[in-house]
Image (cartoon, rainbow, N blue to C red; front, side, top):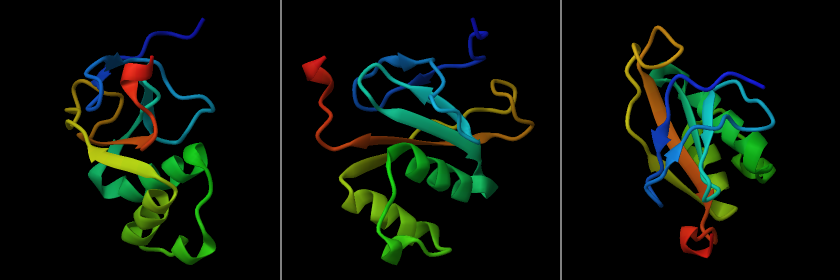
Length: 116
């Protein structure tokens, strides 16, 4: 059995605490909510890693959106029907990084937590 994560993250859609790491593993800190949303966290200077992990977990985006610019790749995720919300920052003393972590939440628009 793997150890419990150091911190949980509150889902912006259903309000539950997400404590389970994602599967398959990703580069960023990750948590999966029971409603299907995924939180990805990394230092703010590594936002590109968050976006790359989201693409790998949620599915590939069209080649036209695979540019070096985060905004293009985010647009590609949105075109797939992925909603993206900024989460609460995780202070360095709560996480596994020496830096504060930026958290972005992702879920497909058709995911409705009331259907659980």
